[in-house]
Image 1 (cartoon, one colour):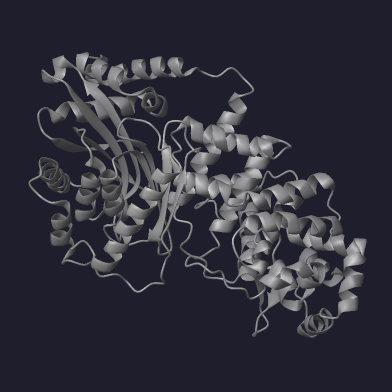
Image 2: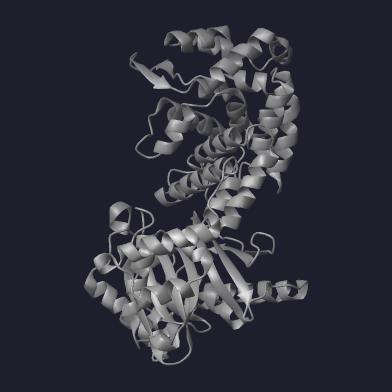
Length: 554
């Protein structure tokens, strides 16, 4: 440990003969026991673990190169000598389709990713994470938690977070961590998947989502802001090292948004915060100023008055005015599509305004899929139209979709639609809403045949979970299935057939697995209430996905 600590501190390479000598003795049980009992060895190990420095290694040609000090400790056996509980995950393969490294390699890579963030090397990809990583006041609990976050996978089976949270306690005590730091490591390991799941599967524009996540942070004890900061850094380091393509710019943006929203929520609890009514009044005034000529008019007033309060709380005035101008264009048409102000640079935002009716989301999903657009998030709002607007009574849907072009990357994926592309999408949607075209026929025609050709990929088990506590107003249905063309339409169509109204949807992809979440109510606006109804939903959605896998959209 002295050898490697000195090599790291001085920026010098360990000679190959010395490395071989260390590797030969590290597997001796008595040496391991003596090493773990040494306070100096524990101190040096922790200093190597949390150091942002890189190890200098000799190459075959003798030239120095940079490398990972933790990977070197693992390679020669010093990591296992200090933490023998790490042995069960060495060479262990993740039993999923989006981890491409073994558990031990992934864990070491995650620690190295945190070092890179601390050095500021990834500022172009993770600007917020780099800034926060450089400000961590007590880094030891974070680094230890990151090293051990998957140690619970050594036994196999579900619940590795909970197992790891317990397994880490004697390890932390042996490494000399205080009771406070040990509790923090245990909490970070137990919650290490929570932030990712909330960011990618829950509606971040729902104040209840942020408030619930903030409560999880507060329940961890200690300083809530510090706990949030460390959980965020652990999540970014973990997800970005599961595979080279796991951390998309969209997922990174979702994690940033959740961190910033929760940080604001926690900070605002310490001071007087605007009430929802004050926010609505401010947004209403700002929307009027953003309207052409800087004045509101009856249509904008009616639009704002009819939209639900949570829509106004989630959007700034100029954005509300832009949505209202798209809605005004609909007139007597069954549906229209407009490009709305982008919420995120990695996606375009479409505003779809249509007469509300059952199954509308399924039709919109079909139109978007037929036009090679992939939905990332969907927010569905409805407003009653006044007699002055239409000369009768009607409910209008104002739906917002963050989308990107399928099979495209980077700026090309989020490039705005041309006017010709927008008109074609709008024409497809109008035909679907009028009933002139069947959604399945449209998809078959545009995607080339009765069944879609899929790229070879591992099988994915379909799982359906129903959460009645995630939202006060909606029941949340999480669907995990193999990602394939037509999946979102199939699920939305099945939910419509069950008599459910979809209010919001969030789409995530993990390798070949889609993780789609739907905020639903019964047609009468109530939450899904009975276990028998849960079973019916699970059976029907699973059957629809199975038919899609077997027959395509034929």
